[in-house]
Length: 126
Image 1 (cartoon, helix red, strand yellow):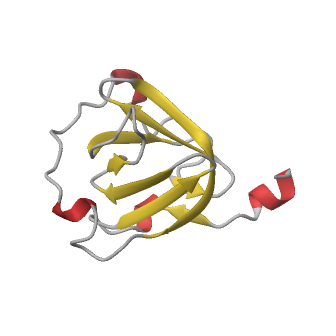
Image 2 (cartoon, one colour):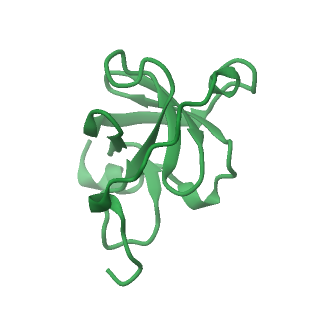
Image 3 (cartoon, one colour):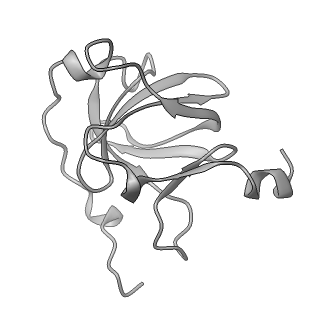
Protein backbone atom coordinates (compact mmCIF):
# COMPACT_ATOMS: atom_id res chain seq x y z
CA UNK A 1 0.00 0.00 0.00
CA UNK A 2 1.51 3.34 -0.98
CA UNK A 3 1.61 6.43 1.26
CA UNK A 4 -1.26 8.17 -0.57
CA UNK A 5 -3.69 5.27 -0.21
CA UNK A 6 -2.62 4.71 3.40
CA UNK A 7 -3.45 8.32 4.31
CA UNK A 8 -6.86 8.09 2.63
CA UNK A 9 -7.78 4.77 4.29
CA UNK A 10 -10.85 4.89 6.53
CA UNK A 11 -10.02 5.57 10.17
CA UNK A 12 -12.06 5.04 13.31
CA UNK A 13 -11.61 7.50 16.13
CA UNK A 14 -11.69 5.47 19.33
CA UNK A 15 -12.98 8.48 21.31
CA UNK A 16 -16.15 8.46 19.18
CA UNK A 17 -17.06 4.85 19.97
CA UNK A 18 -19.44 4.18 22.85
CA UNK A 19 -18.28 1.80 25.57
CA UNK A 20 -19.15 -1.76 24.66
CA UNK A 21 -18.86 -1.22 20.90
CA UNK A 22 -17.83 -4.43 19.18
CA UNK A 23 -15.34 -4.33 16.30
CA UNK A 24 -13.90 -6.95 13.99
CA UNK A 25 -10.39 -6.01 12.92
CA UNK A 26 -8.96 -8.10 10.14
CA UNK A 27 -5.20 -7.95 9.63
CA UNK A 28 -3.23 -9.64 6.90
CA UNK A 29 -2.85 -12.75 9.08
CA UNK A 30 -5.69 -12.79 11.64
CA UNK A 31 -9.19 -11.66 12.49
CA UNK A 32 -9.56 -10.03 15.91
CA UNK A 33 -12.71 -9.26 17.87
CA UNK A 34 -12.56 -6.23 20.15
CA UNK A 35 -14.96 -4.81 22.71
CA UNK A 36 -14.29 -1.15 23.54
CA UNK A 37 -13.74 -0.52 27.25
CA UNK A 38 -12.76 2.71 29.02
CA UNK A 39 -9.78 4.73 27.82
CA UNK A 40 -7.44 2.80 25.54
CA UNK A 41 -8.51 -0.55 27.01
CA UNK A 42 -10.20 -3.19 24.88
CA UNK A 43 -11.20 -6.79 25.38
CA UNK A 44 -9.56 -8.63 22.49
CA UNK A 45 -9.43 -12.17 21.11
CA UNK A 46 -8.33 -13.75 17.86
CA UNK A 47 -4.69 -14.74 18.12
CA UNK A 48 -4.03 -18.41 18.97
CA UNK A 49 -1.02 -17.60 21.19
CA UNK A 50 -1.59 -14.11 22.61
CA UNK A 51 -5.38 -13.92 22.94
CA UNK A 52 -7.16 -17.18 22.14
CA UNK A 53 -9.63 -16.17 24.89
CA UNK A 54 -10.68 -12.57 25.53
CA UNK A 55 -8.10 -10.56 27.45
CA UNK A 56 -8.00 -6.89 28.46
CA UNK A 57 -5.19 -5.04 26.67
CA UNK A 58 -4.19 -1.43 26.07
CA UNK A 59 -4.23 -0.18 22.49
CA UNK A 60 -1.14 1.77 21.46
CA UNK A 61 -1.26 4.38 18.74
CA UNK A 62 1.62 5.19 16.42
CA UNK A 63 1.17 8.94 16.17
CA UNK A 64 2.53 10.65 19.26
CA UNK A 65 2.03 14.02 17.52
CA UNK A 66 -1.74 13.60 17.46
CA UNK A 67 -4.21 13.66 20.33
CA UNK A 68 -6.53 11.51 18.24
CA UNK A 69 -6.62 7.80 18.96
CA UNK A 70 -7.42 6.28 15.57
CA UNK A 71 -7.49 2.80 14.18
CA UNK A 72 -7.14 2.70 10.40
CA UNK A 73 -6.69 0.31 7.53
CA UNK A 74 -3.11 -0.06 6.35
CA UNK A 75 -1.59 0.50 9.79
CA UNK A 76 -0.50 -2.11 12.29
CA UNK A 77 -2.67 -2.85 15.31
CA UNK A 78 -0.48 -2.44 18.39
CA UNK A 79 -1.44 -3.38 21.91
CA UNK A 80 0.14 -3.99 25.32
CA UNK A 81 -0.69 -7.44 26.62
CA UNK A 82 -0.47 -7.97 30.42
CA UNK A 83 1.58 -11.19 30.02
CA UNK A 84 3.31 -10.85 26.63
CA UNK A 85 4.13 -7.14 26.51
CA UNK A 86 3.91 -5.19 23.26
CA UNK A 87 2.21 -6.98 20.37
CA UNK A 88 2.31 -5.52 16.86
CA UNK A 89 0.15 -7.18 14.22
CA UNK A 90 0.41 -7.31 10.48
CA UNK A 91 -1.30 -4.37 8.71
CA UNK A 92 -5.03 -3.91 9.23
CA UNK A 93 -6.95 -4.88 6.10
CA UNK A 94 -10.51 -4.15 7.25
CA UNK A 95 -12.40 -2.77 10.25
CA UNK A 96 -16.11 -3.37 10.73
CA UNK A 97 -18.78 -3.47 13.39
CA UNK A 98 -19.03 -6.96 14.81
CA UNK A 99 -22.00 -9.28 15.14
CA UNK A 100 -24.87 -8.35 17.42
CA UNK A 101 -24.53 -9.02 21.16
CA UNK A 102 -24.86 -12.67 22.06
CA UNK A 103 -22.75 -13.98 19.18
CA UNK A 104 -19.34 -12.78 20.27
CA UNK A 105 -17.31 -11.37 23.18
CA UNK A 106 -20.40 -9.89 24.82
CA UNK A 107 -21.39 -13.26 26.33
CA UNK A 108 -17.92 -14.41 27.30
CA UNK A 109 -16.74 -13.78 30.86
CA UNK A 110 -14.63 -10.65 31.16
CA UNK A 111 -10.96 -11.07 31.85
CA UNK A 112 -9.53 -9.42 34.97
CA UNK A 113 -8.53 -5.80 34.52
CA UNK A 114 -4.97 -5.24 33.39
CA UNK A 115 -2.72 -2.56 34.84
CA UNK A 116 -1.31 -0.12 32.30
CA UNK A 117 2.50 -0.23 32.30
CA UNK A 118 4.12 3.04 33.42
CA UNK A 119 5.87 3.38 30.06
CA UNK A 120 2.48 3.58 28.29
CA UNK A 121 0.97 6.34 30.40
CA UNK A 122 0.85 9.56 28.47
CA UNK A 123 0.39 13.12 29.63
CA UNK A 124 -1.38 15.91 27.79
CA UNK A 125 1.80 18.04 27.89
CA UNK A 126 3.71 15.85 25.41
